[in-house]
Image 1 (cartoon, rainbow, N blue to C red):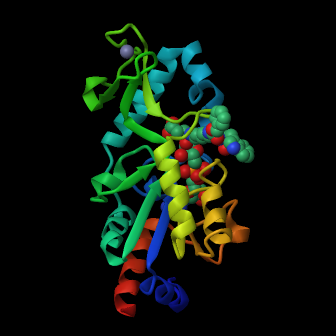
Image 2: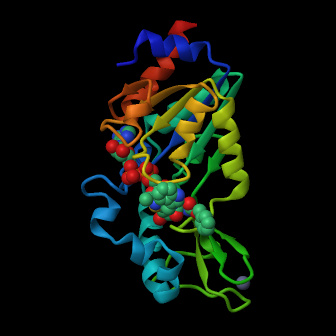
Length: 245
Ligand code: BJW
Ligand code: ZN
């Protein structure tokens, strides 16, 4: 499953950068977006994941995010998350960038997680930008109001919104600097995150490795694909790197 080429390249790497997507949490029981049976097969992103949708029907959007927050609170990190946390200390530099909002990397022990699309446990006021953590803005049927009168929204990045500038800058710089870039469990369809593997390869000359049971939009540009679930691949990758040293 993990070839000698990949194990050797990784065991000698100076800087490994990782981009994760919803697929890394699939084996924890968190639905992905674009797979058959994924969230966007059942729900319309235009009605749930845009600012216009929230303004049109804040309760609907709040309820949907409340349901997802509760689902996520009741699952656990899987062996893929734990292996990524263990990989952190194995290289001179290791950068973990995620599109996920589910906190599962942090719960598995990853210390520095760069979240491109926010975090579902956080909420923020539409007017004064006050931030609320966890049960400071608990899940429920109706959208909550800030003391300033503004509606409180999930602190995630919806379509048409800018990604957090600092995190995107970090991710871009890591892509340029790394010598191995791992793209794991993402369909590679959402920009600007999907640009990062290309930047790593074209600007940084990195080796691009994908871990995904299905070919993604990035498949034609990757150097190696390990085409199996990340919860199975990542623990083996960790063992293979240890064995190659
Ligand atoms: C497994 C597995 C297992 C299964 N193991 N793998 C350039 C070109 C075209 C469009 C655009 C462009 N630039 C910008 C856009 C527009 C838009 C966009 O990209 N649209 C495309 C969809 C067409 N982008 C944006 O709007 C972004 N903002 C932006 O660009 O702002 C610029 C701007 C400029 C000027 C003014 C204003 C703005 C924002 C994007 C925000 C995305 N938000 C979401 C929701 C977050 C909150 C929430 O969770 O509700 O983020 S959408 C959703 O998609 C979520 C994800 O993070 C994101 C990516 O999905 P991901 O992670 O790849 O999941 P899936 O489901 O797609 O794939 C799962 C994969 O896992 C599959 O491949 C499976 O095979 C695999 N898998 N089991 C490993 N066990
Ligand atoms: Zn406020």
